Image (cartoon, rainbow, N blue to C red; front, side, top):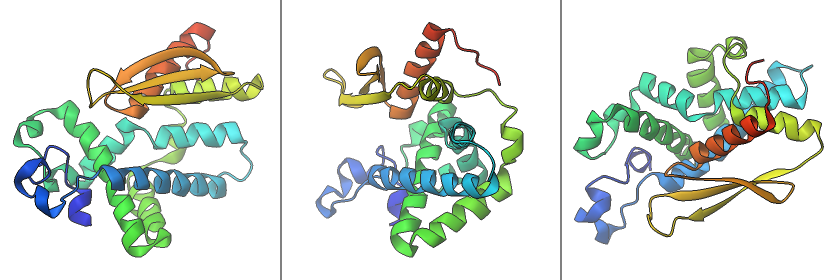
Length: 214
């Protein structure tokens, strides 16, 4: 399972050499680990900031659980060095950052399946947050556009959601549409769903002329 967590979709094993043995890449575990990570960080912030409101907690979680931050954490852990990945991708720093972040989520997913939520949660808190992140200092960084839009939505009693579909032209791309009160605002195409969501939110923040600093 841990080998699967560190096996990228570009791996030779995934692309034919061992297809008869049903060798999987790490995307399923990444899906699971993403949910476990969100829950762990939400619980940590809930306990650490007992007097902060929902908007603050949501903003903080967004700053911790984002592609750039996860990519940096994966780099510090050396995950990409351990990964089963196409050799050409190892020379692409931008790709490695995203691949590493996804692998970190997959690793958390593997811990959850193998050892349960308690162990996965302890890994997130002790190995990631306590060792590498200054949570209070993160409040000084630029707010994510998704967090800004969420705060505006809550304040104005509106709703927003994302509708995701596979791209008709390229199988590795996702079409992500931002809906506010059920009305389509923006659509972005990207291989990474969260990146597409952030790009949609960035356009929404510009449309609403919302401040981008706290």
